[in-house]
Amino acid sequence: MVVLEVLLYAALIIVSILLIAVVLLQQGSQGGAGILGGGSSTPLGVKAPMVLTKTTIVLAVLFFSLVIALNLYYKHFVLVKSATAQTQQIQNITAPIQNQ
Image (cartoon, rainbow, N blue to C red; front, side, top):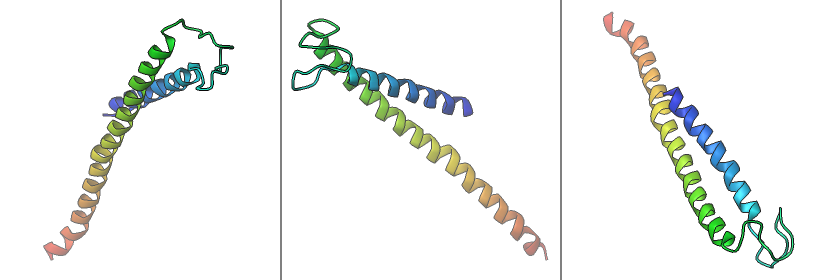
C-alpha cells in the first residue's frame, strides 16, 4: 500500500505544479499583461482563454480529488492500523490478568 501512497503524492505534486502554471498563463481580467505575455495578445492563440479556463477546471477537480483520496487513504489504512495496534497492546496487557 506504500506504492499507492507514493503514486497519490506524486500525482498531487504534478497536478499542483500544472495548476499553478495554467493559472499563471491566464490573462488578467483588466486586460493587463499576464505573467508570461504582454499587451492584449495571448501567447497561445485566439482560443487560449477558453482552453486555459477548461484546463484550470479539470486540474482543480483532479487536485481536490487527489486530496480527498489521500485523506481517505490516511483515514482507512493509517488510523485503522493504529487502532489495531492499540487493540493488540490492550489484549497483551489484559491476557496475563485473565489467566490468573
